[in-house]
Image 1 (cartoon, rainbow, N blue to C red):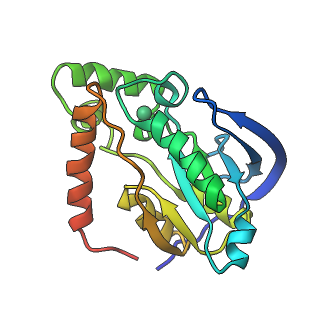
Image 2 (cartoon, rainbow, N blue to C red):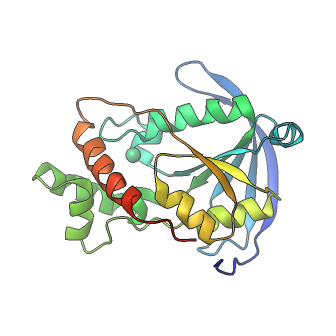
Length: 213
Ligand SMILES: [Zn+2]
């Protein structure tokens, strides 16, 4: 059963050349929106040529990426967000699709609370237990705005670039047809090993649950 998706519209679109610290360059078409349900400034990056993919009988590759200031911008080694973002941009640009940059820091609890959670993790809790200890859900991310952006962009069926089945399930419940979930690479460093282990054990538990559509 699909939930009713509030309508969002494209506000502005603009072309931005991108250059990453490792020298990789590409060009993105950025979209902003009116009518996103939480009123935050989420962005869609169109990369490559998704309409060519559709003409070839393929579907656009889409990554919903939740903002991580410390990882995305500053190269924090406590998570794998920066390398995942870098990988996603290139893989999407190669085949055509969209990167949806979602302003939901720290699994949706916000930047300061994420750093509070880091402090608790330094005292021995894992990333999910720390969120719960702070009075939050383990994961408060919500992909409604991602579905709204895809609808506003006129995107039909998609494949989702993610290791997280929850994203695919939420998008499906929101009426987005997901034909495939494509895994991302795993970027291990000494500083993020515990984080990745916690993520993997929770994801394995989630993967055991029957899909709800
Ligand atoms: Zn991160």
